[in-house]
Image (cartoon, rainbow, N blue to C red):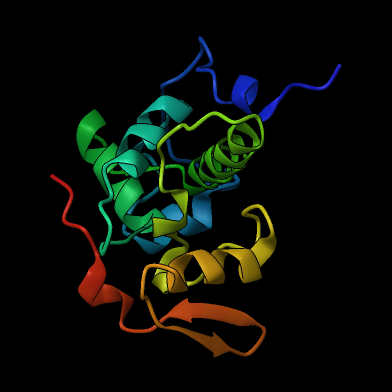
Length: 163
């Protein structure tokens, strides 16, 4: 039987996991872009750490996966976090919130305030970019088309400062 989104949110006993970055890691290119080098320590975390950060974002503010990863790296005192697993958990949180809503429950996590890098909307959120756009516009963010993708206009001025 397939796991529910809420079941997929449960922490894995083998995480968090600190690894030394090697070429060929699935997240190598992403963490290398932010300054991690081969041999640097990176962390793969549980969904609960990501969920806790996403839950903090108040109305009128946004974060991107970049800020989430920076905060996680600081928390674990390493150079970077794996943006691939972080992105998967972010998408899992969004789907768990929507699934709970269909069951009449609230997880109280404003997942739509978490954007992809550079303020782009997440096509893997429930309902795709169009649903993500509608939620953001419902909070008065201006969303603009960039080819086939959407981006929050001036997203930088809405970024929440994580500490």
